[in-house]
Amino acid sequence: MNPRLAVDSIVSTGQVAEQGNEWLCAYCLMCDQRCPMGISLADILIKLKNISSAEGKAPSSVVQAVESLFTTGIIALGSTGVDRKRSQLGLPELPKPNPEHIEKLFRATGAMEILEKNLAKEGSAQ
Image (cartoon, rainbow, N blue to C red; front, side, top):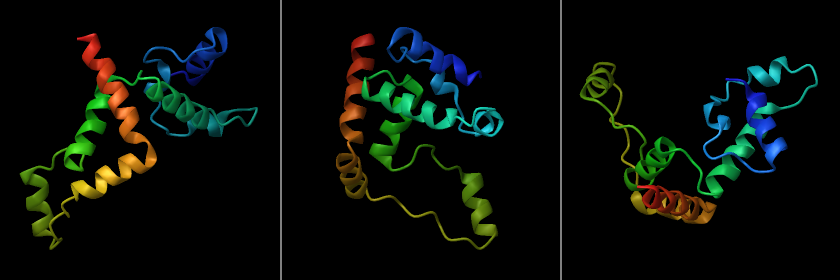
């Protein structure tokens, strides 16, 4: 992933690309740590992701993960293997998320409107 491509795209067009390169950023911070100019490309890429998702341009995999978070409180379902290992280690069961708390958080942060915008865009694309 070349973080400059995502930034170059917005500089040259004045718009965040439709599902652009910013979504490839894993936020490893290597670009920040190696930038000779001291520019925080990782922060810029996060801002581009925020703009992109606010415009309804988040990739479907991201929209699906956020929708799962909203509806179930988790992004990835656990497995019986993880449950068994936790039990063997004497760890308690993972807490079950409270859907009311999740909805309240989504609404308070504006994430609900962004999710709805991206879901609508996905629905219209199909």
